[in-house]
Length: 102
Image (cartoon, rainbow, N blue to C red):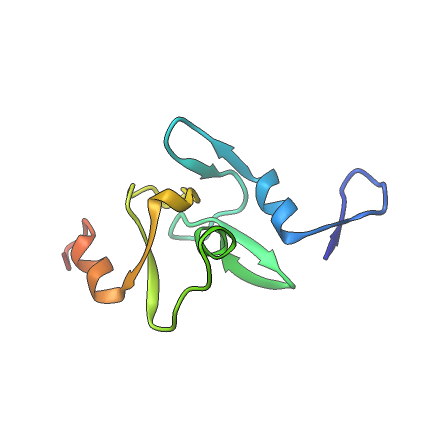
């Protein structure tokens, strides 16, 4: 766990750090922290980099089953709103996408 930036010496949980980087709008919950090269939010959990939308899914909905990916129903890669996230197979995610493969 990381210590608080204010200098109080307290530790901040990954969930606390998650909420520090979320800006809720009328629809999406936009990640304001670091982004990867594809525009997805990143957060460190126990010193391991995790995509913020996957972390959000797991803390709000539950564990992501093996072989599943998280689809952004809103098509906003910065969104971490669990109501906008769905666990699907990679094939379904590609078919729903807006790229060449879909």
